[in-house]
Length: 377
Ligand SMILES: *Cc1c(COP(=O)(O)O)cnc(C)c1O
View 1 (cartoon, protein in one colour):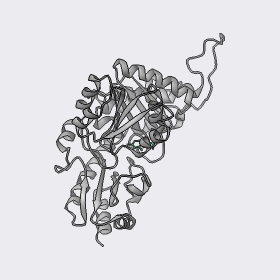
View 2: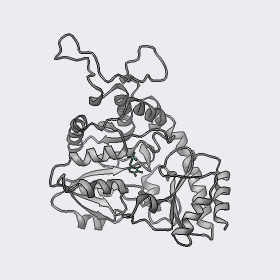
View 3: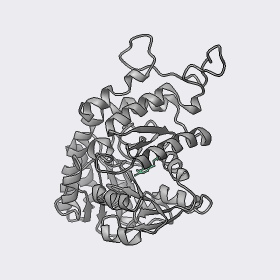
View 4: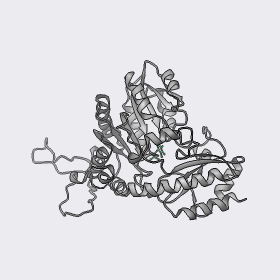
C-alpha cells in the first residue's frame, strides 16, 4: 500500500478493541493483569515498558517508513537523547554545522559524560564529510532540510559513504516527514521525527519517534534503544501517542496545502524589495534545489528569510504581523513565525536578520496580505 493509505490504516490491528469502534480507543492503564502464573503476563505489563497506543503508533510509523521497528518517546529530544545514549562509549559523531540547537545542546552538556565526541561539518559537502570521518566515528547525524537554513543534504550519497566506514546514518527528518523524504529507503539507518511538529500537526501534543531500518546495525541499535527507553523512562503518554496517530491520518492532505502555500509565499518574498534572501528548497535559486527535487516528494512547508536590515528590523517585521503568530515550533495548521536567533539563545549561529516561517494551511491570500503589510514600513 502507498504511504498515504498506511498513514491512515497501519497499526490498527495492534489495538485490542472490544467495541469495533472505527476510531482507536485510548488505553490509559499503567499496569496490566498478570496471568495466574506470575511469570507469564498478558503481553502488556507496565506502561513505561510499552502500551497499546504507543505500539499502534510505532507499527504505523514502521510501516510508513518501510522500517524494521519504531520507538515513540515523550519528545523529539527524548528520542534524540535516547539514541545518543545508546551509542557505545568512545564514539565520535559528525553533526551538521547548523544542527537543531537542542541536539547540539545535549551533546555539549552530556557528550563528555557519555563518552561521546563530535565535530560539526557542512553536510551539503560530501568531501568535507569524508574528510571529517575518524576511525572512531560511529554516527553520521543528518538533518534535512535543516533548521533553520533549509539546507538539503544527500541522504543516499552520505549513507553510502558512512556504510563503507561502518558508520550508522541518522536523519532528523522532522521538516520533511515520512511522506516527503523516504529516509530509510534512501539508505539511512534511523529516521528521527519530532512528532510535535507535522505528525501531530495541531500544536497540541509532544512526541518524538525513532524509526529503524532493516540492516544489522540498525536492528541492534533498535534493541538497545528499546531496552534503554524502559530504563531511562522517556516514554510518551498513551494520549500523546493517540494524538500523534490521529494527526498522522491527515498528514498527506495537510502537507499538500502546507507546501503549496510555502512555495507561493517563498516566491512572493523572493520578489519583495525588503527581503535580502529566502531559503526554500523549492525555489530554483536554492543551492540544493536539484538535489531536493530528486530526493524529496515535495519541498515542505518550512522556509526562512532574511530581511534587508538588522536584527531590530527583523523583529519589528515579525511584531507587525497580525494573522501570522509570533511563536516557536512548526508544522501545525496555523502559520507561525519566529526570530530564530532569539529562540536559540546566545550560542546561536543563525543570522540576526533571519525569520523562520512555518507555513500553515490558511488561505494563502490572507497570509500574503499579512506579510505584505508587515513588510510595507
Ligand atoms: C523541534 C525539533 C526537534 C526537537 O523536538 P521536540 O519535540 O521539541 O523535543 C528536533 N529536531 C528538529 C529539526 C526540530 O524541529
